[in-house]
Length: 423
Image 1 (cartoon, rainbow, N blue to C red):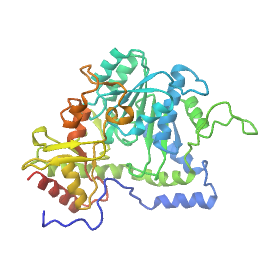
Image 2 (image 1 turned 180 degrees about the vertical axis):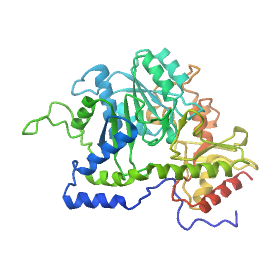
Image 3 (image 1 turned 45 degrees about the vertical axis):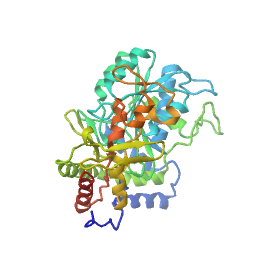
Image 4 (image 1 turned 90 degrees about the horizontal axis):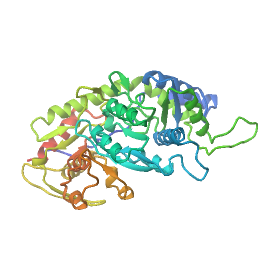
């Protein structure tokens, strides 16, 4: 690789892409002095996102995590009634959760006293496996809530999951934080569950630097979320509180950034798609596959381009809790080698999200695979030989630089670096 020089400017995994309209709406908030959690930017963002996604109501919140928390709390009270003040809405109840996801999908379940049960992943979408979900209901027939994420902008088999949920009288909280703009049969993700949540974090397809959105078709639920997100104040001339509330409302300033981003959502998706297609073409001669986007039943948003190395092309790799080691072999590579090589040349990649049931905080929680088996042997994790699908994808996969400001020339260098790793 002596003829390849490190990038002078870092090539990132995913960063905000600003267009200029954002500052106009932020300035408007400043000049009109609407700097708090009310204002025209918030109203417009809620209207525009509800219309785009195809739901009746959208509530702008401080983060995607806030949206997930409040959706899970709402689902818990709908299923089990209002809890005691000292308890969460899910106290004593299990919840089926996606296993390969970011922890923000699962943490709100624990905020409300619930017990996550992790459902294995499938190779078709890298998302919750409907067959494993069916098996989970056989083992835990009393569960009434499913939290499903759409990983990296690729929709889960949500229609099948909805069929299963209906059969078992379960609700679905849809974590569409990574999949804004993706759809299934022309229905946007975020509109396919009982409650939907999206994120405007700094690395998302559009951003406010922070922020999130709760999505519903129920006016009652939308009003409840607005109340809870502003400290659950009652309609009284003084501060009157009959429920626990949260400081979860989006500010009018953040909403101004999101408002300026919304017109460019489709452009960002097209740019991300072009990056994915260039990687796919560039890797045709390598023993790898790209993450499964757009294979028949869904339209993704291509948020992150990822790859998975064929089993026979994996060099030896061992991961601990915070470190990884590998042995380089001719004709083979592994995620650790590729990520270290990219970092050496000033480009940012990332491992696949580590499955939740492998996380130290959740290792005592149940994990269900489609064959009905539970958690795999710890030694298999260390050796990279687990048959769990999520663990396998984690061991062999990685996220590639996917910033939509990356030039084709920069991407060509990244493709070349990865080819060199297999020599």
